[in-house]
Length: 635
Image (cartoon, rainbow, N blue to C red; front, side, top):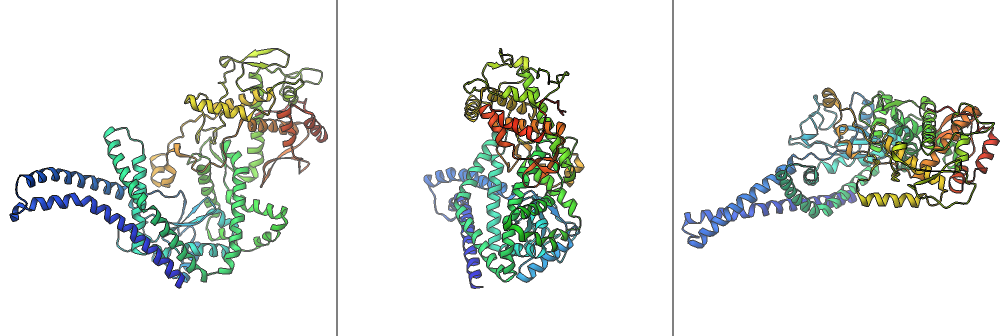
């Protein structure tokens, strides 16, 4: 308890320093008014008389009034500005009575106030968040005595405990005991948070941060821009003055909470921390390898948290070091503490798509959920055929003629052989720079690129937007917005394609331009008035700020060509060799032949793109019985 008391005393000391900074700012604002009052009261007592004092009174009184008005304006913005809150899925006590009961029991064991509510976030982290500001919405309608501060108004004198935010992957992967051990240090933080000085210091810092955000917002009125610029300058000055002390205060609060939690499930917490790292690795792999391809197609997996369990179970099967983790699955999972785990998982999955990819806040015709059982057909097969169709459209635009010869289909249907023949480099050639006017044809002639003839803009080298085809997320338009950015994008693309053949570079540049045109942003339908009143305020953000946490940078032109060529190979395998699309929980879309994963295709594809050598890929196709000259079905 000595260490805990010392850490909490250090946090309180830093909180008092922050409050002293606030008091000094108030004193500076009141100083001109105090001097003006003294000057105005002086003649009534027979003092401070004469022409000099009269001039001082006339000069200082307007200044004092202006300073008071400015200080009142700054204080009003700081008090009324809405502090930022994390986007979460709220969990009511009716939806998770066992979870609330476990948290209350944990708070009783720690001898701290229980959190006021519980919410889930689609991330592998947990924290306490103060949402007592009146701008965060109305309080709960009914009051629960078991939950500290629930159903009470924020402006009442007794403190309201913060909200406990739990990472949704933890509920599905961890067992009940492990979750309790992981949450113990977090719940213990409600004790220091209830201290009046620490709570007041936090409110002041959050108000300054919110005021800076308000001042940084777009304003068209010149007067409001000037006023908010002054407010922002004052708020930033105060924020810089107390930033270091606020950080030390939070460290002290965390140290005190960790020390208090030592007495609760300490041994189990060591084991649970290993599960935290494992859950983070599985969650990251699931989002980047499995969820991202579906998001790009306008589909969002509706059971991401359940997918974490499948991904980590697969990891435990492959990795000898993780063999012991599979035995944990026989214990009660923490998601059993929820009344409807499926509905909660679906809400968290939709929020994850919005945060990490920029998808719409509500499902729609172009943004629909997909179950894991439907993923191979609805996402993998459709993605490969869409990419293959786009590849052949670009080949048509480049003037590449369909395959001719005795083995070619009479209908001129698209084939893999057409792509292989075009990319095979039969003569030594220097790498092409994207945007060259002369593009080689298969018949030995050349053609001059024409934007009007092909309908495609010049290759800018910009990768595709992270949003789906519905226009979610930022997208790179076909035209440069600034000469400098256009030159930089062209330089980046030239460097990316410097190690490829001439035909590969031209094809990759055209694919990049085509995909950028397809994914140009379109506005999402706005929610109805009834939806807006019941939805989470975090879902009503401006789409221009999304995604908040992009998973990957935009794909390069070389990556796009590799993806499209791989998709074409997979389509040929499905249509000519009986292969099927599959889902690998750790690697994402995969090609299955006779129920087994096919050998690695990436080195053969890269050899064709970089060296123009189709021999390794043709040998790979022959070994698996894939007929490149046969027609394939496109989307």
